[in-house]
Length: 212
Ligand SMILES: Cc1ncc(COP(=O)(O)OP(=O)(O)O)c(N)n1
Ligand SMILES: Cc1ncsc1CCOP(=O)(O)O
Ligand SMILES: [Mg+2]
Image (tube, rainbow, N blue to C red; front, side, top):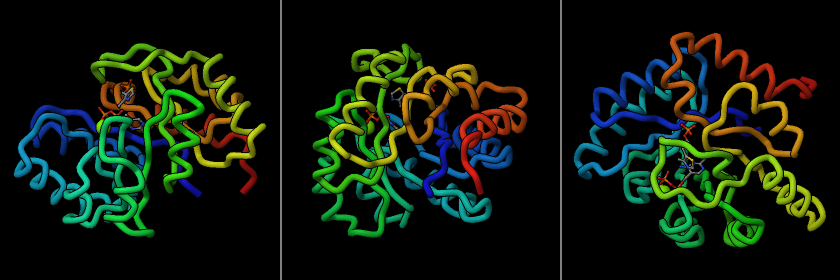
């Protein structure tokens, strides 16, 4: 089963990224998306080369944001692609069946298309405004998730959906009630002074109804 908590990395330098990633893994994250925007290919590769063994050490899934060639070159576990990034079907052809491919969605139709094109999970958002990303799609709010998840159920479309965008601890219960699989967060973990405690609290809520 896909982990219910994804950590999306932050940091403007290789050092800051590595620090944030290491801290998040050490505090208990087991799904990492390396998001290193506006960088040279060389720096992105250098960071990915350091992140790969770290994720292996912590047995965390290593997902690369945006960069198809880097995903293949570094042999990451997968990639996350947005609505204006490489198309999901092209990525599937390029990466093969074993890599995880995630796709961003803002509407039910986005999810329908992604599923048709071989996507493995959806990042649905934004839930609310966030400073972590520029040029946000329309904010969904709780009612947006509720409507889209209801439509998925009605149309018998099954794919893990992650809520994303400005999510805090107290949003987890109401979001999970809409039928999402989990959450993808960046700011709350990066900025927390008590990461281990926060991740434990998030996981308690995310896995509350799972019987092992
Ligand atoms: C899990 C998850 N969901 C959505 C996004 C956003 O992807 P995208 O729209 O391509 O924006 P950037 O992250 O590339 O700025 C994501 N990264 N992860
Ligand atoms: C990458 C991305 N895509 C939509 S919102 C977002 C940022 C999520 O980060 P945060 O949890 O800090 O709002
Ligand atoms: Mg993108």
